[in-house]
Image (tube, rainbow, N blue to C red; front, side):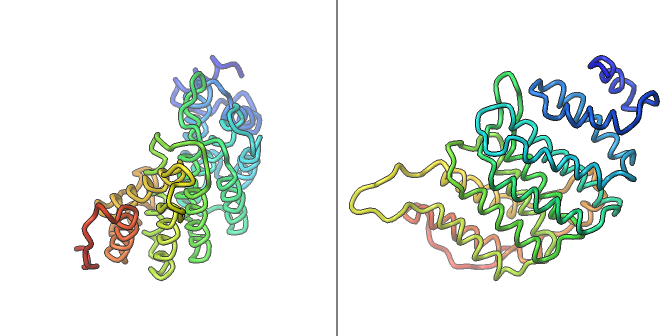
Length: 304
């Protein structure tokens, strides 16, 4: 189908054309997700696929569609600075929508969703290209789209305490990993929201979460020196970690809301996480320790 034909599909309300097999059109749209031209992927491929997902067009094919999308996570993995990141990033974004659909309609079996989770986390911690906006290509946003995928997996009924703990560790691995890229396009907020989604499941004890926060806090403090700084501080990853911790603090303090188009989010986000008060204080402890010369020490009094 020509680009103009896809434009007409969009202009007619995203109705599924009846003159071509669905699998052929789907394969074409999936290929378009990796197009370096932003209009092709962001104004045609992604919205058309998402609309068809939400209307149930792929409900009988959901597992196969997800398996096909997962393969895009490995496309050019290990490269940095070329266009291959577009395919990986938009595969993550599309897989988040597929997991979200399953969270709504409960069609995909646990082994399949868990396999998607394994592929997603393996890709996410190995993604080197953290560019948000790329001139001439628009949004890449692999870190933000990966965070959206983690949030979708955190909502899954197939993810229990063990799997949620793995997601938590993956977030720490991603935040703390050395990088040359400073996150400046909302990546910290998107990752913090993924963690908030996980916390709203109320499946993890604070005895697991607090050591995780301490691990992140350790990444905020400079290494020991012998009278002089041996490396520039803060490093890029330390700045990213600091931004993430502050985003998590703010989201815990203010509260977050889910997506209006996901059926389960109203109930999931109806109340604050059970251990919110303790978690908020634990986050503050790590932020305070980053600059002990600046912040006044306070007692761990529960926050209302």
